[in-house]
Length: 197
Image 1 (cartoon, rainbow, N blue to C red):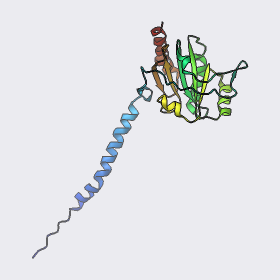
Image 2 (cartoon, one colour):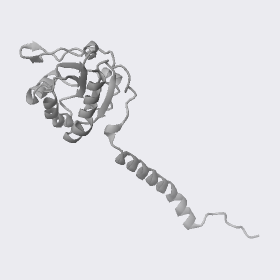
Image 3 (cartoon, rainbow, N blue to C red):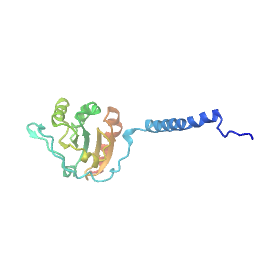
Image 4 (cartoon, rainbow, N blue to C red):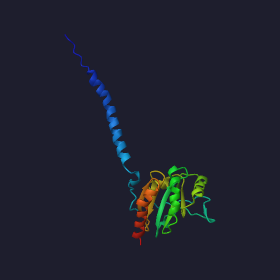
């Protein structure tokens, strides 16, 4: 009586072993193209159109403007004026790149600049602002990162435009660059200024 083997032919066995690898590579390529082709700064925020978080943050200890302590973050300060809220840290490399642009923006007195200092050492944060100049009228310290979570922050830097009613109207993920400043951020700020007038 002949005993017939039920084994799989070698070519088919090799194919079955390689199939999961091919599927994995295919998925990896798909994810890479989906992530790589998208502009991360266009990630939508669930907070657009909603009131800015009502989190009070303490001031950056020792930070002064002409001998006067710079106040922390008080959500009541958003009412009545357009605000640019920038989440930053001294250890954040892109924050160093965008700092001169924020200093330039601060010259426009039609809106206020508010900083949220994210998980930073006070000495390092003061040194950072001393190096580039402090563009912020208010700097709130988010030592544990909870306030930034309430703002829906993915990572630093991120920038929000808050309208006169205290509502978040725009979110920029990533650093401010000369390009996105001119093409996106300034137009969004102008729009917020017109909406509240």
